[in-house]
Structure formats: C-alpha cells, structure tokens
Length: 456
Image (cartoon, rainbow, N blue to C red; front, side, top):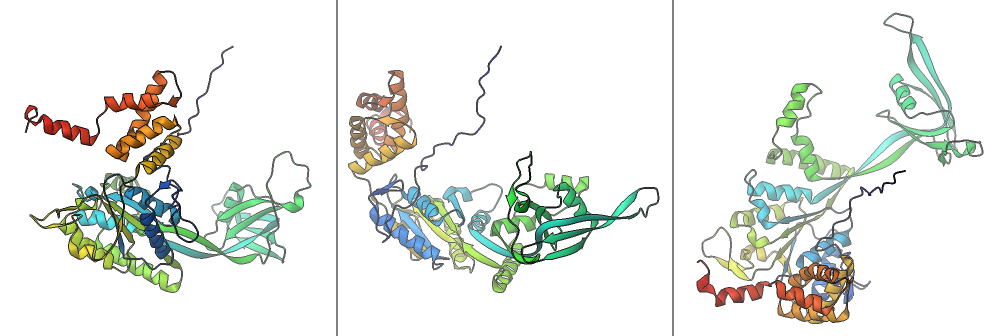
C-alpha cells in the first residue's frame, strides 16, 4: 500500500517591502497614532496625508498634485501606499516609476497619458428591465419544421412567473428556451430574464418547496417581492484606459484572418489623441445624463527626478485637463540638475513652475526607537522571531547605516540562527551577519580609502 503526500498548489503570498502597511493609522480626529496600521512615526507627514485623503474623498482634489520629499528610507512609498489603502479598492491606484517613461516602443508622453487614464475610474449605473419570479408553468409550443421533414421545432415558449404581488404569463423567443434548458430551469425555480438581452439567470428553488424531500442539496430563495416586470440597477467599474483599449482594438469577426490580425498586432499600440477626445465626449455625455460618475483615482510617480523637462511640461497640461487624477510624486533628491537641461539646478530636480503647484509633504529620518519598532513589525510580517537584545543591536546599527540595510539583514540573520539550530534570532546572529555584509556608507568609505586600487 502506497501513501503519497499531496502538496497544496495554492500560491503562497509573497512578502514584499510594504506588505505590512494597512492604512495611515490616524484616530477619528485625524491625529497620527505613534504606531498603527503598519506605520511608525512620521506623524506630521501622515496627518498631512490624512488631509489629502479627506480632500480626495470629498472630490476637492482632482487635478492637483502632492510631493512626498525626504531622504531615502523615510517611508515615502509607504505613505503613498497607505493613502491607497485608506481610499479603498473602489478608487483606482496606479503606481509607476519615473524611468518607466523611457520606453523604446512608445513616446514618453504616451506612457504618462496611459497611466493618467489608468488612474481615472468611471462608475457606470445601468438600469435593466427584468422579469423576475417563480416559474409556475413552462410550456414549449412546437410547430412543423419549416425546412420539411418529420421533426418539429419550438416556435415560442410560454412561461408563467409569480411574485408576492402578482403573476404574469410571457411568450418568449425559442433562443430563450435554449437558455432555460442550459440553466436547467423547472417549475418552482426562481429566475430572472433580462428584457433587452434575453439573458436568463436561475437564482435557486423557491422556498415554498423547502419541505420537499430532496436528495440534492438545493439553495432555497424567497419569493421575489414587487411586480414580475421591474427595473433593476447594475453598477460597473471601469477605468478610462479600459475604454481606450476596448475602442482601439478592431472587433474583428470570427474568421481566421481577423483572428490572425489581432494576434499579429503589436501589444504596445499607441492610442491616438483623437480617440481619447471622442471617448471623453461620450464619458461627459454619460456624466451629464447621470448614467455614469467619474471617480478620480491616484497616480503615484516614484523617483520623479527621473522625468525630464519635456515630460514635466506635458504634466502641466495633463494636470490642467478637466479629467485628471490626483498625482502623488515622491523623490529623495535635494537640489539637482533638471534632467534634459544642461545646467538648470532646481529643488528635487523639478522645475520651479511645477513645484509651485504642489503640496509638499516632508518625511524625516527615523529615530532609533522607531527603527526598532519597524524592524519588529517586519520580523512579524516575515514570520521571524527575534530577541530584544538583537532588536536593539539592529536599532543601533540602523542609526549608523540606513533602515533599508537593517531590514535586509533580518532574513540572513534568521538563516544564521537556523544553521545554529535556533528559531529565535539572537544578538550574535546580527553581529555575525553585520560583519559579512557591507552597508552603502561603509562601502563608500572603503572606496575612498582605496581609490588608487580601483579603476577610474
């Protein structure tokens, strides 16, 4: 007898740099709690981000931009992700890096515009006419086959629907009869039929039959209230980029040539400005009629100093457009040359006229106690156990080096502990790993001391 162990095929969740962040961690008055929702310290920056979230929720922020500025490893990306978490999954959030615009296939401005459109949602409210009720009769009416022969065809189907308010008898197309057969609809089932498309959906068995002895586990649903013929509201969420792509691709037929045409089309096709203007017209018409509602999301551009002067001028125009998302920039640069210019030096590498438009949120370096709290959080997220002594050793190391370096030492320290047959990370593991790896500052110091040994 052979017994095999079956491994689960479910994908394990990858722990990334900001997995532990669940929100901004503010109380009901908008004041930052020292350590909450995965964020530690940076109280001023978090409170400022909280105000930005409130402005976005009250739709007073569209077409504006925020800049998160601070030294490396001070939680800029973390705050941007926390803003996304606070807004919830119904608000589109599109992250990108400044260097993404330098693609060999698409123009710089096209990459920016595409991401702008990805960050704007459209909530479409559709009112559908439906017939809903419990099936009281289901009779297919057959006639002689018009093609000749002995077989008979279904000309139409008579269906009786009952609700708490009344009953109705409907005469339906034979194609709907096929849908009814596919859904295995019988008398006593609760169904609804869309009036315009003829789509049939079986919701379950009417609870009037719940006392019947049935071998199969059946879902019983109550008898629908209201009339048989009613209007039902359906809400759908799309982004403007989805609409662009849907209209840019040719909706070819079923023949082989159109299939080949769609396969041969390069993936990175450029969507023209003309098409976008047409889509904007239709979107605006829908908004005026009250069918759709615009949901400005968040476009997060990290390492914004990587953009060049052309892209910055394009951003000006894009921010002024009537349909624009909230843009959050992040940078760790101080005064530096604006990319694409010869010698124009500006704060954060951003032109002064664009800086004037931004609300700037500053992030400050962490204190030792805060570094210890963050390392503890990361250890919990990664499922590692760490002693208090090892934690304070990492905190001390963090003040001399950087937070990123200390967080990166966690996994190697855990492996060292495992080699020494322990599950808990001790101080000696941290010291051992610290001696094996160099941080950026130590490496720079060594390079300066031994510069004659390295190639220029």
